[in-house]
Image (cartoon, rainbow, N blue to C red):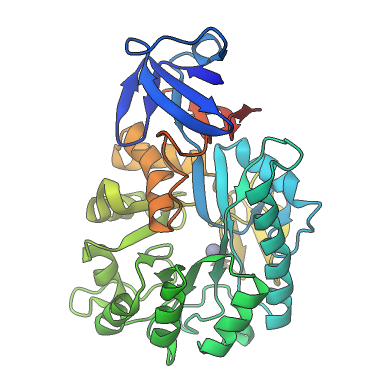
Length: 391
Ligand SMILES: [Zn+2]
């Protein structure tokens, strides 16, 4: 048994002062305060208060929209290369993520899905040779069922109309490891595919969409329950033609994510988003590319070549993903919206885990995996712990 001691702990809904967190076989067995429970003699004690002033224990971050980092693109990286990316993610507090595809030739997408499905399967059953690293928890299909009008940098020649046959082909290639799918609900055939994906427990997310309000609502009625990088690659909000954004911002059941890097969405609009979705339904994502954690230069995003300069990742002047990391997104939300660290952490942990159906992630409660991040009071990552093992 391992016992972790810290100054504070975010479950994240609750805060515990002077917490003790008990880990057995990689799972959390108990969470309490020092006043409530004794440390057993046989336990291995990891006292985080010794190394980190004001040490805060929080769930490891869960990034449900991530294309790469540390020079590696998830659609192109080999199985041998992925651990390098996973390791990079832990340095930013991420313990679980969804490798996310972009629109590409169908054969290439399927080949990438096969590789990623292997990585997800291996991460589920083993500790990767006991290395402490973030794990792919499922795959996010961003495309190919996207709107031409709102495609962003997804190549138009690889966008396809949604059909059950193509969805089935992608599903088979991924051996059922698709956890999330971004789709434009207004496309002909979309509602049928949304309903089928939802039936298979995929978190269907509306995005890359030019939907008018009725089409967006039809998508939600068919089974969509989330929205992808709100405001980006979406029909803009107009006060007389509210469109998809009105549905995303006003539907109290829908969760939604946002890229809070200060580039994709103005800080004031991030603030508006957070007010609309609240602390329960706001989700932070990075949409990071291979360029995250790397110097300025040229990088691949699936089949797309992107250019990074001064923190902006673009293709022909259009934004093409980000170089954001989850820990920075958390701090940005504190700065631009005045959210507490506890609430900002929730949007990077419990909320994405709930939105996508990951009951063992994003929270520090008995039975959950012991995936944690040790934060300073201003949200800097000091240590990351995966299944009770620290790096
Ligand atoms: Zn993306």
